[in-house]
Length: 226
Image 1 (cartoon, rainbow, N blue to C red):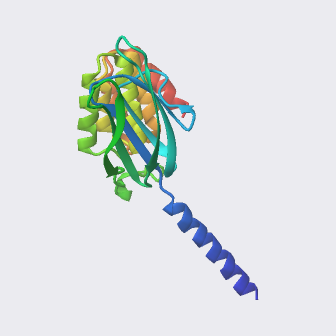
Image 2 (image 1 turned 90 degrees about the horizontal axis):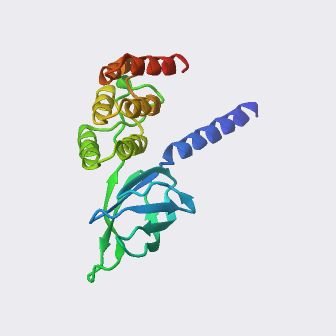
Image 3 (image 1 turned 180 degrees about the vertical axis):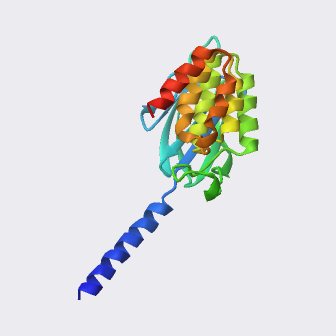
């Protein structure tokens, strides 16, 4: 009897583990075709307090989500767009805000749905790192950062993409840091990305992105506290 009881417990634990493993997050990417800036709220939660022409959001539960998009007009009143979207587990759904035929307002259109980043080989990554940005992902992010004129926006793009991917290799983080102009932004990105770095034994590589010794000391102090 006891044996059957323990077998039942093991079965339930195994089923729970499989169920937890099957749960996968979803993601969404929204950008404007003509470069208009907008504010995005999902389920009443403000995503980007600073207006942007491109917003990526990860760690979302799969299923239907209510979007509230406030598109800032150029010399005219802002357009408010409410929409509901269905997000698939394990995928990033890409949407574009494009003008209508008359061009006076924007509509939301789904343009793509791509799998989230592939898992890293277990030998190369700690157990906390499940996914990492691939080379084409890094190249794409670098292009987006280059198109932005302000370091604050470049920093937000880099942070958003790293979080969305779930992991990044040290050499790729170095490239994103070098795409920032100011040292304090590079420090902020290094601190944010530390929890997502998949090869932490090589993290000292990012110190080469700094020009001032004070920046290196600040990051060292941060690492000592981890």
